[in-house]
Image (cartoon, rainbow, N blue to C red; front, side, top):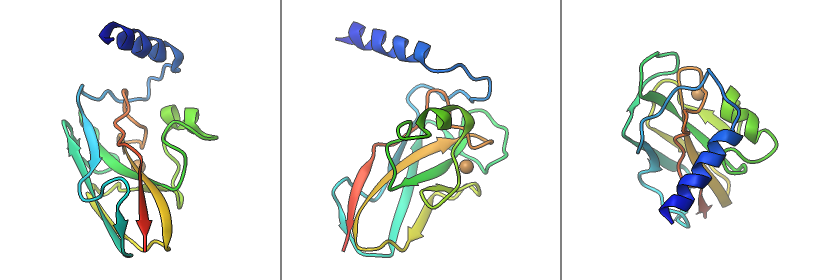
Length: 146
Ligand SMILES: [Cu+2]
């Protein structure tokens, strides 16, 4: 099984377009939601706390190895998927209602969200808002706002 995974990972690496722009991420770097679990039911406003291990948080524009800033993907396909999925791996994340940048180095946000279900995912970006290689991405969680 381990060999199979290694082959899949290798194939994926070849399938990805090479980019000189991407910053390297150390093995085992991990971004995660500190206070929310998949399937949680919450009240608005919702405080979302961003966790990061194996790397450091630095404001956008800071050129320092093994650092980055948080991005919150809200109500869009999982990172790397959707219309611009391939592009965002290489050229960086857009900034709009579905892509929030925390370029000041913030590690939490409080959002007013309408009632219903919402998907959330965290992606670390480097000084130029480009995801690292390999990308440091959380799982997608779905929360229900009452
Ligand atoms: Cu950014």
